[in-house]
Amino acid sequence: MTTQSYSSVQQKIAQRTLSVPVQSALYVSLFALILWTVYFTTYPAIHDKVHSLRHHTALVSCH
Image (tube, rainbow, N blue to C red):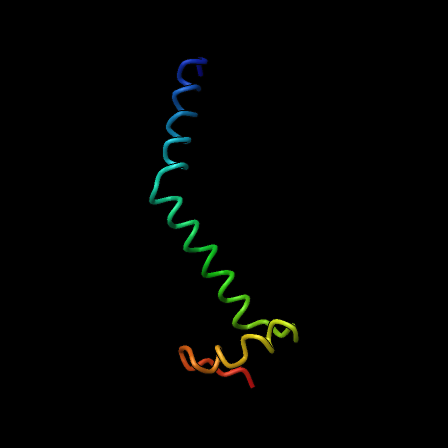
């Protein structure tokens, strides 16, 4: 593989990685993971603060 073709491959990877759809998918996935972690945590400090929110959104039960 020549230097020129290697550079071309790197540019294509960078364009795809930094594209808006890829960034959007990563942000949505990150937000979903954070929301899931907050909703279903058993850590008392966080659980107590979001307790009523859990029961009022999407009928999530916790007990």
